[in-house]
Image 1 (cartoon, rainbow, N blue to C red):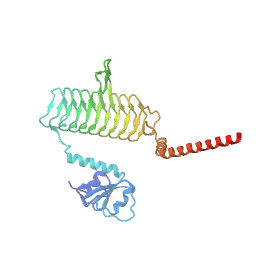
Image 2 (cartoon, helix red, strand yellow):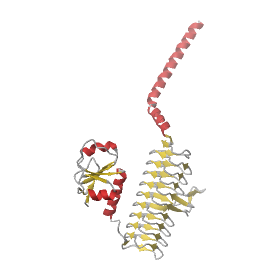
Image 3 (cartoon, rainbow, N blue to C red):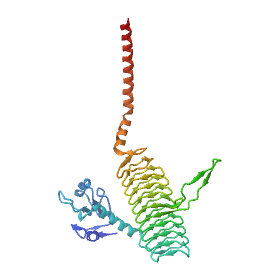
Image 4 (cartoon, rainbow, N blue to C red):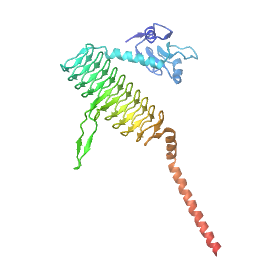
Amino acid sequence: MQFTAQQIATLLQGKLEGDPDAKVTEVSKIEDAVEGSLSFIANPKYEEYIYTSAATIVIVNESLELARPVTPTLIRVADAYSSFAFLLEKYREIISGSGKTGVEQPSYISASAKVATDVYIGAFSYIGDNVVIESGVKIYPGCYIGNNVVVREQSKIYSGVKIYDECRIGCRVVIHSGTVIGGDGFGFAPLNDGSYKKIPQIGNVIIEDDVEIGSNTTIDRATMGSTVIRKGVKLDNLIQVAHNVEIGENTVIAAQTGISGSTKIGKNCSIGGQVGIVGHIHIADGTKINAQSGLSKSVTNTNITLNGTPAFEYKSSLKSQAIFRNLPELQQRLQKLEETVQELTALLSTQNLEYKK
C-alpha cells in the first residue's frame, strides 16, 4: 500500500519537513532502508544513518538537531518510537483484514451464546454454551471457546487458541495462536501405593483489560478461586503460568519462563527469559529478574534487580561471578601457598632439631 508524507504527518499530528507528496510503500530499519521506505530514529546512536539513508520518509523526535542537511523527508513528533509503533499497528490492521465482521462457516455457536452483531468469528471455531462475546471481538479460525466464557470488547483471539470453561477475558486483550487458557493445574496427591490421584481443578482464569499473551503460552486454571492476570500485563511466547498464580499490573515476562503454583507477582515487574520461579512466594512491586535466574524465596523489597540461581541482588551476584571465574587461578595460588607452608614447616622442624643438639 502507498502513503504520502502528508497523510502520515496528519495521522501522527507531526511537523512535516520536506516534500509532502513523498510516497512510501514499505517500512524498514533506518540502516537497511531503500527508496520508498518509511523509517524512524528514536535512539541517538542511530542518528548517523539519517545522513546516508536512502529512506524516503523518516520519523524523528522533535528534539533532534541535525548536523547537516538530509535527503529524506522528516516528520517530527514528540516520541518517534511510540509514533512508529502506532503506525505499524495501523498498518497491520489494514493488511490483516481486522475490519472483518460476521461468522464464517463452518463454525459452531451454541444457541445459548450471546454474540454481539459486529464480531468476527473465523471458520472452524467452536463457541460453547452461555458464552458472552462482546462488541468488536475478533476470533480467528480454529478457536475453541468453552462453556460460560466471557470475552469482552475489542479483544483479539488468534487461530488455534483454546479457552476452557468459565474463564474471563477482559477488554482489548490479545491472545496469540496456540495459547491455552484455563487448562488444569498440575495437582496430584501421592497415595500409599506410590501412585497419584488427580486433584480436581474447579477454579478459572481471569485476564483483565489490555493484556497481551504470546503464542503457545499456557495459563492454568486455579484449583479453587482464580488464576489472575492483572491489567496491562505482557506475556511472551512459551510461558507457563501455574494454578492460582497472580501477576500484577503492567508486569512483563519474557519467553520460556515458568511460574509455579500460588505465586503472587507484584505490579511493574520485569522478568527475563528462562526464569524459574518456585511456588507459594510473593514478589514485590518493581522487581527485575535477569534471564535464566532461579527464584526460590519471596522478594520483600521493592524495585530491586536479581540475578543468578538461586537469584540474589544483582551487584552482589556480579561480584560472585567474578570470583567464580577466577577460581582456577585461586586454586593454583592456594596450592602454591600450601607448598610454601609445607616447605617452611619442614625448614622450621630441621632448625629446631639442630637447636636441640
